[in-house]
Image 1 (cartoon, rainbow, N blue to C red):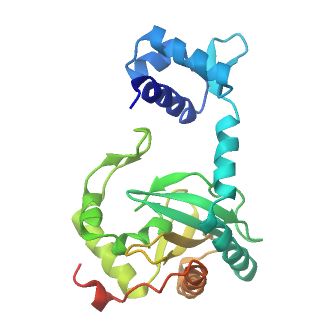
Image 2 (image 1 turned 120 degrees about the horizontal axis):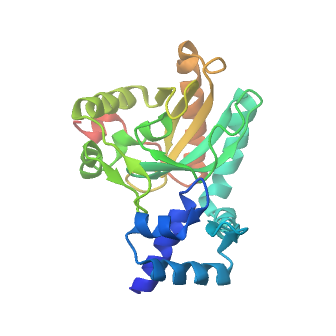
Image 3 (image 1 turned 90 degrees about the vertical axis):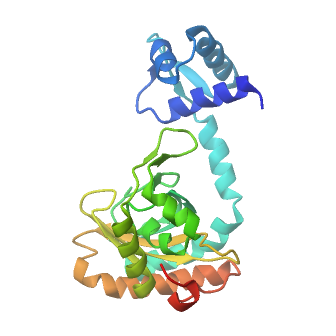
Length: 261
């Protein structure tokens, strides 16, 4: 594989994961790359329209070109098109914001969202990646991962870019999570990724041996109260089943079929 391409992608990733424009020296240090090499790569990205220099500050940021490509990819995604009507239904009947989160262990990626009347706007944006054990969206998937993949969650890791971290989970916490979700068939989180935001989620299946992702209902703790989670848990199970059917999948197996933790 072309090392120049790999280095160019690393520069793209560094810019994408930065909240502010980045300077040449800063990028060079963080990427452990020669300044002249970083300068050549930035110039190529600017010429191609993927990056731009910020005024006269000698700093760089991404343009919307990658966003355009990403939106085209999402728009053409068959799973998203099939699941989106279920998200609309979930937001309508519950009033909460309804997400589909894609499994990408040890993370989940929010792929699609429909805001409910009682959901908090911008609770999470599509494209956001979070640790699989940080919120209900991922917790609902964990018990149904292959044993090797599930056990690996006790170790810290990063995503493919190296910019998003997963801190790992203790074995005791992992076993307790698996037991709870296999018993209830849905997962819950209180102040998971954001303080004051609660969620319930259930896995969505295709014909693969592990879930494709999960359907998530989320709102503030005043709208999705802890004492009401069993009611919303039952509703999210119905939505997950509908999404599974739309994808041509079958319902997840029961605990006896899954075997011991």
